[in-house]
Length: 218
Image 1: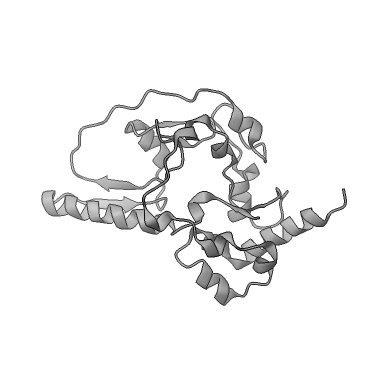
Image 2: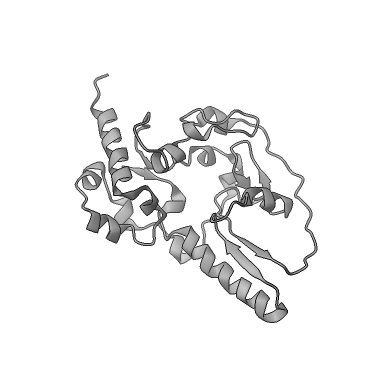
């Protein structure tokens, strides 16, 4: 069974979150006249940094924003506005330093000090990278290992946003299905999905490399 990054199994979070923030931004403009710009990973803005400054959570050793009581299974969006607002207080909390994420990272991308080498991260390699890489069995798109082992996610609550529910058609795909997939089928299955970012060629490369790993002699 292939494993996909959880955030990618439902509707593209860029679209879902933008729609919700657009409604808030419009309300701000209508009621105050202030200008607003919505960004969802679409501007040179380090959203995790500002979320930490705003008291939403703190950044862990795994580079993820950790929301106290909810963990790191969250996505971020921002509204940049000219409306004067009182500053919030940063949470002041920090990672517990258990280093589970560092030890578990398949690509050894985490340095244990809050830094990471993106070129070793499976999320980068399976989505943005062009060319071959050292494949990890069953990881077809993205990687959640550093979040799966994080103790802060033990109390995470499933989202109530219907659009983020995993699509059965994606979960049912195997390497053979992907390798035989035509562009029209790819476009249909992954419409409004973040997975379309890797394009059919990238997804088939991932499937091909997983297949190669499975067939190599021990």
